[in-house]
Image (cartoon, rainbow, N blue to C red; front, side, top):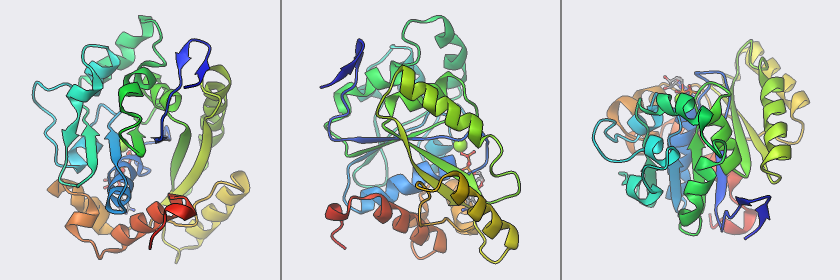
Length: 269
Ligand SMILES: Nc1ncnc2c1ncn2[C@@H]1O[C@H](COP(=O)(O)OP(=O)(O)O)[C@@H](O)[C@H]1O
Ligand SMILES: [Mg+2]
């Protein structure tokens, strides 16, 4: 285990990936649910942590948001160990730490607490040998919940919607990622920028893609996620799109993204 200052920095064999973009509606939660599922279908042990009080990722897996069981809030507030918050999902090899609206309180309550930025990283320590991929969803802001996701992660994955204002906010996001790296988390890097809701027939979408590639020349995923109605319908059935409509373009695109993310040596098919 390496340490940086006094901080535990053990990620074991896990790739811990924070899904971040302070803009809402760009596909963070959709990616948490469906990339997580795709990785599990490719044989990986996956943990998804819902770090957004809106709980869209939790809903997307059909996991109940009400109830007395611990969730991300209790984990961050050190009221429960992360093992007690794990929920099995319909997806084999994929577990979820759900979020409830309580989590909105953590953003405020953590401000006056010690080690407020490193809570999630600490909490993850017992699990890093158990999972190969940990995906952390985050809310549409650059507050403490997003910072906790970035401090826990080794990689940031940035979903960007192919639309007119796509690049707005990305410089600010990049600055925050750089600050977190310098202050708390040296290994953190942007491992990928994912274009979502892409429609290659429109000139705007193509232009946005080109502009993004200038901004992130090394980090664009080859896979784009198309705009696909099945992706937006699946959450109301509490299912990842692969279980809802595996042949849909949305399901195929997330499978292809997952394959792109695996190391070449891990790819059997
Ligand atoms: N590729 C896509 N095609 C169609 N609808 C999508 C796609 N990705 C996301 N959506 C829908 O867009 C909305 C915002 O997506 P979401 O993943 O919740 O964004 P975020 O978590 O960044 O706020 C949701 O209603 C979702 O179902
Ligand atoms: Mg979301």
